Figure 1: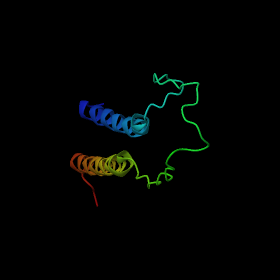
Figure 2 (figure 1 turned 30 degrees about the horizontal axis):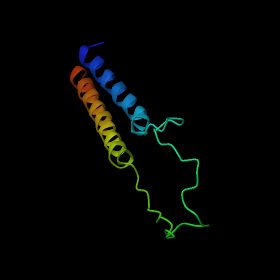
Figure 3 (figure 1 turned 135 degrees about the vertical axis):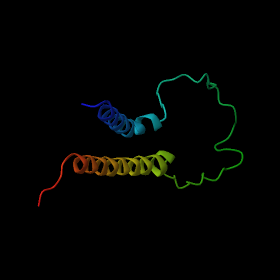
Figure 4 (figure 1 turned 180 degrees about the horizontal axis):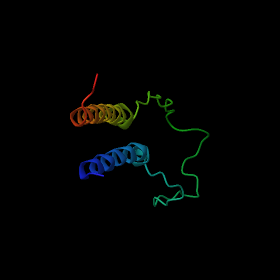
Amino acid sequence: MKRVNRLVIFTLVSVLMLAIAAPSFAKQDTSEGENTGTTLSPAQISEGEGPAVPAPPPDEKNVDQPWTARFIYPTIVIITILLIIGLVVGYNRGVIRRYKVVS
């Protein structure tokens, strides 16, 4: 196999592995059981049945898609499609240069 073909195959495999591994890189590490150093007082601080000022419930915001899903995945798909088209065109031109069609 030619050196260029090996390089193209290596590049394709690398891009494919990056596309497969991208979601795991984007995950946040949420290890449970970590000690943050915060301690609670065992004694009751206030007297009474409820809080001094009732707080309204927090507003739930719409969670946007992570940037990886919006930008990285479409970019990888477009680059892969262009690479495959380039390989097909390059292969066909190479075959046409080597062989003459007899009609």
